[in-house]
Length: 244
Image: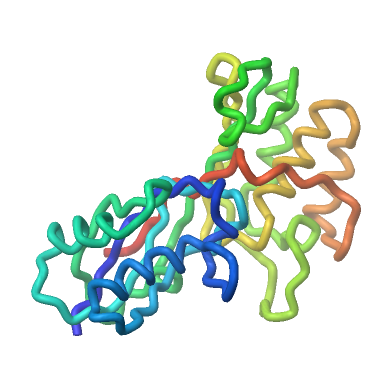
């Protein structure tokens, strides 16, 4: 049976995250419902590269599914989109090897967190209004997480994980007028990890948390520490890389 890889863009505002839930609207659920229509009401399971939280967006989420169809990839992409709501869209569709897995074959994931320093209103569903911050101080903190670290202090506790180590390849804040973007990439990310990191770094820049405390939590991680978490609307999964 052919395996299809799709790249998905979605506005997370109206979703209870990516992962399928019984009662709440999710991105995975929307795509599976669209595929079920194309598969004569038989369900098709969709596997995503990352389980984005409630309110988190994506411009480059990747997923895969198996589907026995006569449609070519362009026609299949159009057919799925024709059965999706306006806040989620398939941007690309290709046939891949049966061994490909959207989550387990991924080698690198990229996130962007968008903050706003002025009072502009119309992008409030896609930015966190933080006011004035120190970009040098933000980048000093951001540089500390590059490398292989245990991010226990910056993740939601989960007993299902074997370990909470992640390799962070890039971590930088960039200013674009009144918008400040935090760009980070790594081999994996833990539940709420980027939001905890952003929230804590912003408080460091505001003078409400010390850089030395941040460094201590990276070098000597502890569970259930009292740190800060950024809201979901500024975060977007922008890209997933594979060795293909």
